[in-house]
Length: 412
Image (cartoon, rainbow, N blue to C red; front, side, top):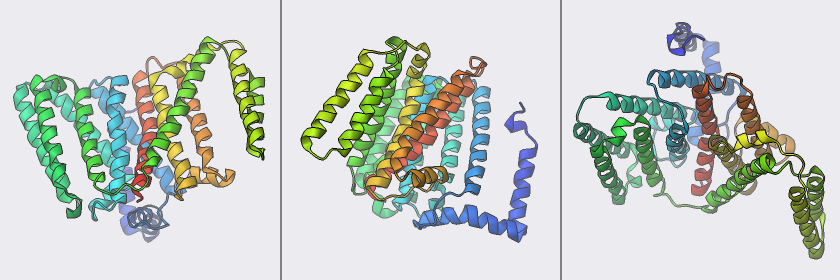
């Protein structure tokens, strides 16, 4: 497969599209209607701010090209894409959602504001990740003394913080915010003087991104919190579902498949408890529900060893990230009156009449992805690609989920 960075057609296609948008009225109108207007409407909080089939397809294509480009860069830099790298990238995913909420809270003015609207914000985040990892690789190979590198990075960090606050409106500033700079400089000096992050690009990437996340959350914390319970409710739902899947995977691999007859009985009991009119009947159906679930585990069928594959920490992290997003959507739509603006989720919610459908859909999609990855014969030779794909898929869950939760928390 030809490398994306060496493909000579992509720049020409992009240039042709730019020229067509500029000189062909019909193309310009199409561009404004389906791409520019939704972003502008989103920045103003108007009802028209949502995705459509055209920008969804194009954004997906760009997302795929960025995926290939990042994969090539990591291979060229000899960065092993293992669990350590994925863990170091988690702050980056939180940063994408948290920084998006800054725009919702009117923390920036145009034109800077437009850079914080999805999907532009995710392009900015990807660019930041590439530059940070590139800097980390250069530092790891540089012959400069560690102290010199550390001093340069501290100066760069102070300049970056100052630049951040320059673009934030005055009413968002607070003297206590600058304490973050003192803490960051102290931590960076101590770490970089020992030199370990300077020799480990993954550690450098994780530290730099985590500090930026703290800065973003500190900025948000200056706004009044209206719905703090959304965070705990979302964490509770997504954590419980992830734990349940992990436990069932272990149980099926080691004890056996839960008895489907008792599971069916448990479902019927749960349905009857919903229909029951008296408290005594509800109590009895709950007792029957618990008994049925217990029997399904006490009398399992034969074991199924492949279920243990789900216990891979990266897979469980993927489940959690998407359950986090699905829980935020469910609670936001059902409890707080928010509206889903992506094309496919909106269609499912409208068809089934409830946003709760997002949770089983998330389970089916993630399970399907895991099954597809585990059935790939060349997985061993393509482990880098597989882990990068998992990271990108985790981004699609954790980043928008973070944005939704924080947006509901602050009532933006």
